[in-house]
Length: 164
Image (cartoon, rainbow, N blue to C red; front, top):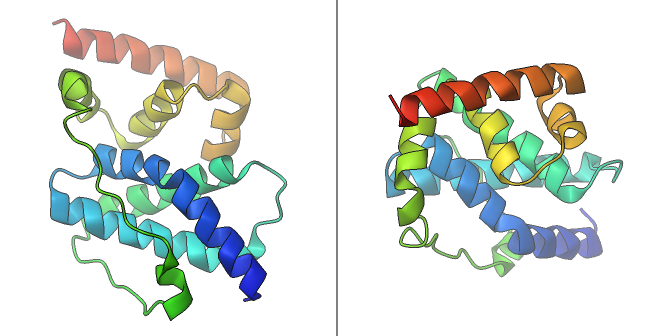
């Protein structure tokens, strides 16, 4: 990969790694799994970056890869994640620990979200990130109308789970 493209990727990943942490938080229950999934998503982003054309925002593209990686890994109940060797240039960005204390007030919400299926989790995650239905539909590969209908169902289901 071109050194300028490498640096561009590293900067984009560094600026947006919080979105990867949020996906990891939704699909893992412990720190070790969180770090493993973070690494796997980073690898998948790295492998796919040469094909990123810029038709959508980097975050939209990254959400799609992160969610697809998380869903496919945990649907298969695959707990060991194979890794590849990074070229030394990839290590230029610094892994920042996720601040779990900041998320403590959302503990109940995450508990409710953990009872949702994989697609429902992805929908509510995108909604909580203030993504519009256009972006949600692009990331999940569904129509905007389908995204709206599913979102309403998920909201109702979450209300039932949080307020039985």
